[in-house]
Image (cartoon, rainbow, N blue to C red; front, side, top):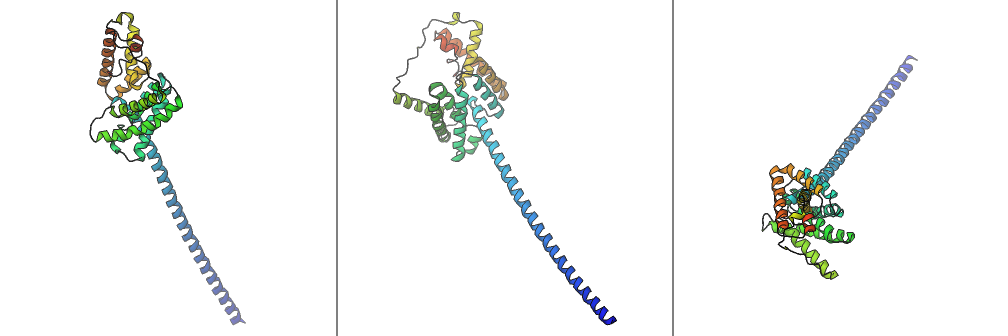
Length: 286
């Protein structure tokens, strides 16, 4: 009887030990699989985070390139000044200049990214500022807004290619790319529409300075600065001078001096007074 009990007890112990070992092995398998799953999840989350970080970095880099392109219109690289210049263009007239200017610089910078043009030139805004000028000029020269948008996208993108090509031959190429692309496009539009154009009067050699008071003269000088971006507004001109001051106070002084000398000279030679007041004679000197 005792032997039978002990045998039964031994059998029960053996069964318990085997079931315990099975349970331990299943637990170890579960822990291993959970470890593997957590490792895979960790790796996936890290890869996702790195992709998101890379995307955000690319977007920020693109935005900085765009703002540098806007600031390079004044021949320096400063993304903060680019923001200031956007505000200045927004205040000036025509109002569409800020839209087409941004369309232009986005188009030029995008073409530079997509076609792998000169990376350094793209980053410092050299491939974007001609495109900015193309958009601002078309806002002034093309009355139909949607045609101006289409022309800006194509011509601004082309200006990046022209600028990249010119940089291999001429450094700095200044606004050669802008002049080539913008004038070619406007000439094609004018011939296509057979507009004919209007003749602009030159100097009469009779001074119009006596017809201008101090406030009007100051406004004309500041308008000459704002006409760098093809807009007319004394406030825009003042804001542009502030933006230039972020890079160099001396550049601010020389810009204002250039517009001053050109405006006074044009008035002294009897240029058309409305054009003087709009800053037309001061922008190139600025």
